[in-house]
Structure formats: structure tokens, C-alpha cells
Image 1 (cartoon, rainbow, N blue to C red):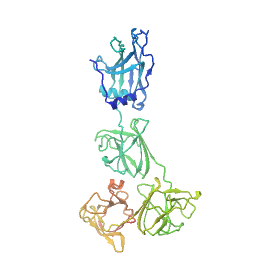
Image 2: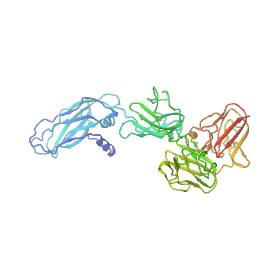
Image 3: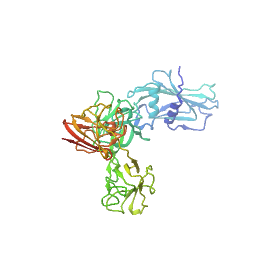
Image 4: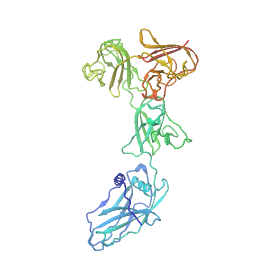
Length: 490
């Protein structure tokens, strides 16, 4: 026997939204209409298309039929089933009164096929449809149309979620922490991402924590390959320059567009004021350092005096543009900053240091934010790695020697073997913060040694370390305030 399927409320709501407009009149009781009840379809063969998910795929029309002179209203019920079932397990849709047309979107039709008839994606599936009537309260016999047939090929929907991961991203190759992309509100299968990427590689997964399926680099860097097995090619997309990027991924067309976001307004910034070593010397202010992982962030680490400062965007010109606080002398816990233009004659707002001492300052010119953090130097530091005498023993790593009279500098003089090392701030804990290089295995002449908190971005996610290629005796000098390192073979 035929039966009516009852959908869960969430599915029913979604499907009703997918149906197009119905043609409805207010003539619920056509008194003199004795015409036959017929049904017609807009197509007899249909291939559903996810790119047109919300567009009409099929229109079903039917005639008014007859109430056989009873003067009662007519209710219409649309019935569908797999061809050959003779409507024994049909899906019934009570359309109501005064409605003679119904539209199905690609999404609605595809959902019906996959949910109720388990129709396989990509294979033609034949349905029959008919309309029957209920006259008045149902005590009077209604009519049933001659069935019509349609062959439909459904699609397999692409994922509604997408994540990016890889050593070019802040989370590294940790699939559990992969960063999510944002689905486009209007275009099916399209996702967007904006974020800072470092030199390295990346790919996409559809489920956090699961390496398959994934979307990898296809025939070229503009195309995707859908990877479903470990034996499939595992080519990845490559970033050669660290910057802020926007990425648009279309899972239906298997295309990708990777674009550098707008370049930072400035590639150099300075700090000027009596709190700084060079004071109010606008011709030779102290220069900030660009963050190696984010070109929009500038750092200044220094022992500051009690006094004021602001950030000029050029040297030699007091009438130029400056980054300033929104008010004069805000507390150093205030994180707001603003670019002010000299030709606008802005208030001469400045930050103020009331307690002299070491500070680490970060200025983000994308978010217009600042962090002014008093720095407390570590009193003990170590080296850990197979290049060091104590190897990878985090419980007893190789000790570095503090320099007398300088609380920021540590040294090591002694043998190193071919291998790697990094600098932990505590022992017994691999999850602690480290000082690391800003890329994996840099040249020993690279003097950068940024502080990297655990979980603090690309360097931590990808476990960047220094590499010793030639065994021998070395002298290492490390400064934790300026975050610099010198590695010299004796």
C-alpha cells in the first residue's frame, strides 16, 4: 500500500524552503468544472546541478479536475515513487486547495532522491508521478491522473565545511586544529579564507581531525584534486612569501584563487621620544622590527626610560604621519592605536612610560592595536636537541651560562654535533614556551631568535629549530630581550 512519509521538522522546513513558488487561486470549489484530471512535467529527463542548487529544476503542473457537481472544494495530493513500484511505497505531498503547480529546486529534488529512494549519485533514476484529489471531507470519490515518468540523475553534494592546514599555516600539519574557511552565502561550493601564511605548504580537509578526504593541488596551482585514498597523489599548494592572503576555493569547479592581500601601508616604522635610546631625534629615531610571520606587525624590544613616545612613519619630518594613542598618556594596558595624518594637524597624543625598564612592544597596523608589555627576563635558559651534549633530554637539557651584569644575555661555549636544537624556558615540559628561529634550519648567520609561546603560531606548530651541519666547538650568544642569537664555530 502507499504511504505518506513524515519528515523531521528540520528537514521538512528545509525542503519547503527549497520548493519554488506555487500557483494558487482562491476558487476552491469550481462548481461546473467536469474536465479530466491531468498532470504534466517541465522535463522528462533531468540532470540535477548543485551549482544551481537553489534554482528550479522541475515544475509539476496539473489541471483543476472536477468535483463532479458536489459544489465542494478540491484538495490535491502529489504522489511520487520509483518506476515499477506501482506507487506501493510512494511519497505523498498534500498540496492543499487552489494550487495547480509546484516547483522543485535542484537541492530539493536531490534530497528527495537520496533520502527516500537512496538513489545513487551520477546514475539515472526513473520516477513516476501522479496527482489525485480529495473532494470536500473525503466522503466523495475523487480522481487520479494518469502517471507521468521522469528520469533524474542526482549529484553527490560537496562538503558544507572546509578547513586549511599545513606548515604554511599557524596550526601546522595538525588536522585537529585546522582553521575553517567560510562558505559563501550565495554561491554553492564556494569557500573563503583570509589569514597570514608563511613560506610552506597547505591543503584542505572537509573534517577536522581527518586527513581524508582532502583537496590537494591538481594539474596546476589554480586547480584542486579531490583525494580520497592514501594511494592518491598528495601534491600540496605552496606559499613562497609570508604575507596576509585571501583564498577562494570552489569545490564544484575544483578551482582555487590565492591572492596576496593588500600590502601593509608601511614596510618600515620608527619610535621616537624621550623614553627611547635616541630620544627626540627625528632624523635618527630607533627603528622597529617587522614580524617574520606577519608583515603588518612591528616589534620594538628595549630598556625604556620614563618618558613619552610615538611612532613616525618616516624620518626627518615632525609634520609627517604618526601612529599615536587615541588619547594622551593612556595606560599601557590600553591596546588601541591610530594612524594620524600630519596635514590634519592632529592632537600630539603620545604613550608614556612611567616605570623605566625592559619592555616588549608590538604594533599591529592592520588592526590598529598595540601591546606594551613589561619584560621580566628568565634567570635560567637551556639548549635541547641532538646537536647538544645532553641531546633531547628535556628533563636535563644543556645549561646556558648567564652573562654577569647583563640579565638578558646567555652564552654557551663547547662541543656541538650535527643535529638540531632550540631553547626552552623551563625543563621537564615539551609543552613549554621556546625561543626558536623564524624558519626551520636557517643559515647560522641569521640572527633572529623570536620568543614563541606554546601554540603561538607557525614556528611552534612546525617546531622550527636551528641546525648544526658540521660538528665542532661553538660559541653561542643569545639575547632574550632583543631576541637575537649568534652561532659561531671556533
